[in-house]
Image 1 (tube, rainbow, N blue to C red):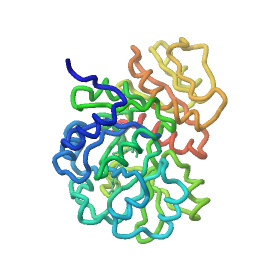
Image 2 (cartoon, rainbow, N blue to C red; image 1 turned 135 degrees about the horizontal axis):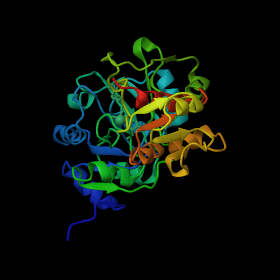
Image 3 (cartoon, rainbow, N blue to C red; image 1 turned 45 degrees about the horizontal axis):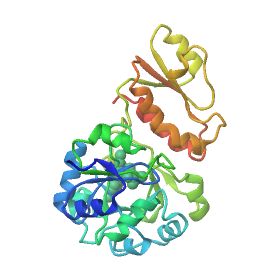
Length: 321
Ligand code: TXA
Ligand code: MG
């Protein structure tokens, strides 16, 4: 009998990770595809399984802030404040790496991305390991991030040894990435912690917008999170009129529309709550992507709090190049 692909067996996960195999892990943001961050062999398997270009570095996950201090050379004071406020939680810090972090993890950069995920199962796993876990989101490169164990199984099930099932992700958006180029706190990726909440801790920050050409911010590629069905972002009534006669799926913030069958519509939060909307975004896109549609029409949500990260993902899902 072969062992099940999905389960909650931490011992099995530990064994596989020690053998340099890959295990998908739940976090509060999205599921990660994890391997021993100190092992070139394990990390190379991550890049291969995801079809990820070698220039796009990986986040290193640990169980405590104190362990981060063993991985990096220096933690500037705003980074310390952010760690105190938000770790464990959906924040990733870019810090100068120690030599023990292999170059393959950082794609040759002297900076490493570190984070403490807030999920009980994965924290238990990390505490039991004597190495940190390198883990990108557990999706094929360029596709929507997974927020359930089943999402991972469907796309990467034949390439990984085990999926730790921690249920649906509570936040549903990837971590917010903050770096400190020339000492200036800078948000490189909007995510599960709102820019406003970061500024409440450390004052004004710069926010880098994504680009398709800036190799300094590899994961900021313009077209990302893209479903197989084309996505249009804009005013729903207007787009429905322009595309009358097509098989359309709708991703809306609060309302349903009578022009489209109910089972082809995803409402992110009928109450208009951005936290709830974030939680439903990726599973909603995945749901629509498996329907027989010509087009997905989505609308932007209010550009504040987590809404800024949601709109960023929607824009990238809609980008074609
Ligand atoms: O919430 C998350 O952050 C999830 C969970 C699994 O932890 N992880 C995640 O990983 O979203 P990934 O690989 O899908 O996205 C990580 C992003 C990429 O855009 C990558 O370019 C950037 O972080 N990154 C990683 N290391 C970096 C570094 N040393 N310098 C600059 N950017 C880095
Ligand atoms: Mg990703």
